[in-house]
Amino acid sequence: MPKIIHYRNKCIGCGICQQQQPVHWRMSKKDGKATLINAAGKKDVYVLTIHRQLQQASKEVAAACPVRVIKVTL
Amino acid sequence: MKKNIELLAPAGSMDCIQAAINAGADAIYFGVEQLNMRTRSSGGFSIDDIQDVARLCHSNHIKAYITLNTVMYDHDMQLLRIILQEVKRSRIDAVIASDIAVMQYCTELKIPLHVSTQANITNMAGVQFYARMADVVVLARELTLQQVSDITRDIHRKDIRGVSGEPLKVEVFVHGALCMAVSGKCYMSLHSQNASANRGACVQNCRRPYIVTDAETGEELMIDNEYIMSTKDLCTIHVLDQVVNSGVDVLKIEGRSKGAEYVYTVTQCYKEALQSIYDGTYTDEKIYEWERRLAMVYNRGFWEGYYLGHKLGEWTKQPGSIATEKKIYIGKGSKYYPKIQVGEFDIEAGTVKKGDTLLLIGNAHGMIKEKMEVLVVNGEEAGEAVKGDKLTFKVATKVTPGDKLYKVVSNA
Image (cartoon, rainbow over all chains, first blue to last red; front, side, top):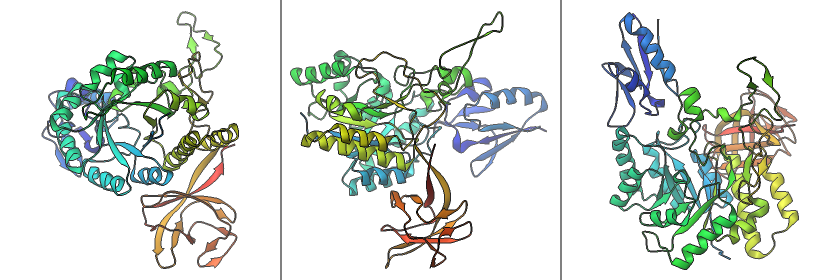
């Protein structure tokens, strides 16, 4: 199954991921950065397994991230 | 002529702050987290560093200003409040802002405010408007010196005062990178790479070469200079007397993404130039020497910006810096012997020869540049040090493993 990986530390909180894919992303009110909903995290790297059908849309989100802190695995 | 003009230096890291202090800056400005205009390019500070920055600056009797000048969204408000509370607690001297939300919170928390150049103040009505909440206004970088001096004269004549009750101060940029857009209000990086310059994520694509192609025929048009959007850097050292005479109170140096050697050299040159103007010893010979030193650190070629009302079109001719010197990494600090004030360094790359000039950058030193007349390698005098060797030399401040050692070479 594909995975979304979020390197949260370098996020600049522009909000594009949340706009494009609100099902997976929300903007944290606490620190203004994006949060990958329901992801498991360790040391500021968050991972979420997603359905294959959502892979393409997630890849587009990763490509839209201005600081390239979102990766989607096969 | 005002004789207490403040020289404000940029700081993207602790070593830059120390470099600014050593070079004689009166104040520094820095940014934290993602709410400043150098989020992408500068390593930056976190909220936890605010207190350390304040302590370092205040113990050295200089002021510290924090930049919070990006476009702000609703989801940023909580972080903004947390930062401002820490700013208040740590007694940072002022916040530099362009968004009304930041100004509003600063007013509520009674934190002194400087209006950023991002607010694009170009006229007296704008100055009067912002005087209700600020103590310093940074004017737009596109004004001529005549326009700047009209504004400062009007402030004096109308006795415009800031929130503190003191006469409103005017700040202008004197050195560093300029944008092809009006101040920082550029959308180019956002349109092409979805990376907003106004959130500090500029990819600097204006700095690259471009070719104009006829979409119908595919024919490429000849242009004089393919770097058609990359402006040269601002340098006013040769007209600094005119800048001073325009009645401004603060001179700002751009460059929070640049290294400690840039901060040190530029701050020191402008400090000396200011002193010469006060003393009446501001001569062409000195200007020539300052320009030579300024050209040694990061620059894209110099022009005096819009201050003299020159025509536009001062573009760079190559990507990146044309500094006459560059630094090559050779190793890091390992030990310090305080009694004899000697630092030991591990050489990790390249070679150092007797007579080379080395650059030591670290939080305790800022920047130290020294010519190696004598080379002590692995405890003995030698002609050369290579990878794996231990190099020792005298340093007055404590050497730590965080210190980086570079070799200075000509960039020809």
